[in-house]
Length: 314
Image 1 (spheres, rainbow, N blue to C red):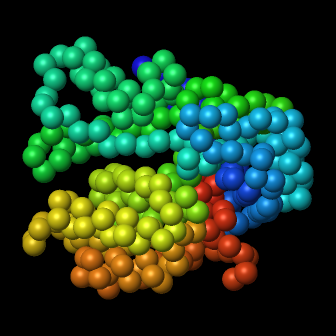
Image 2 (cartoon, rainbow, N blue to C red):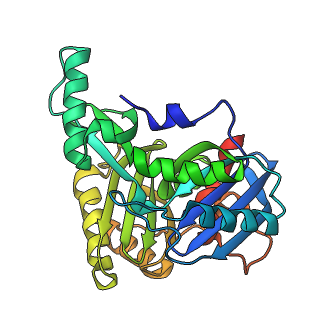
Image 3 (cartoon, rainbow, N blue to C red):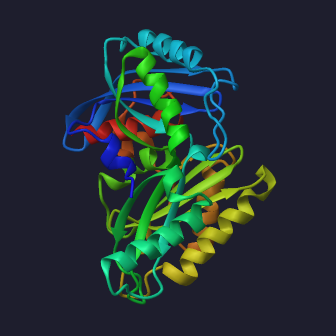
């Protein structure tokens, strides 16, 4: 089985990272201050033509490799990072798919396990295993003792498009992950008692991830209109509250909240979380998550994903 991370991750993790989305590109370089605290050493963000990156799981994302390469080269130059050769890359959310797969019954052999996983992966992602680059991690068993796997998938042909862009500049990719996993590093790296929620929104919907003990507990990617956003977010939280939230005496429930991106204001998202779970949380800011920004005018949302990947350099 092809493994996305084992094929792309080298023994190093660069402190420089690129973030790509439709209409937006960013580059960052982080510097460690002390402990888990870090600061932006260099960064730049460009609004780019929407035609340069067309995020999709099934369709081509980059039709003009030289043009996108030229934009990234100019972006890196503006940030003083043109000489950097090693980068991590945050892919657009719609380019990848992420699932938590649960096995209904234990497999009797390794070959049976692989057959079951193959069937679930192909069914879940709507593509054959041969078409996909896959990364999977075994998670803790669920409350019923069933095995669970966290699986990330991207089409090999689409991944090759992004690799070709970097190669055109003479850059190498040390780590390539979907946007929400870059953003999630800010929750994972500092640790906490209780569960953590990441809501990563866009104009097309959102991805919600709830972590327990630094591992994904629930992952939901929802495509919806802006007027459906709140209802869909409520559904995610109700599922967590009714199915997965710790019972009295067994855990802390939601203790940290990170809201990134479009589709809903941070204040409203926080209200929905507290109304649904009975908590008293507010969305965490950059400094509370461990990142010092050069000024209050600098948008954490625009660089959270690549900067999160850059934290993996130490």
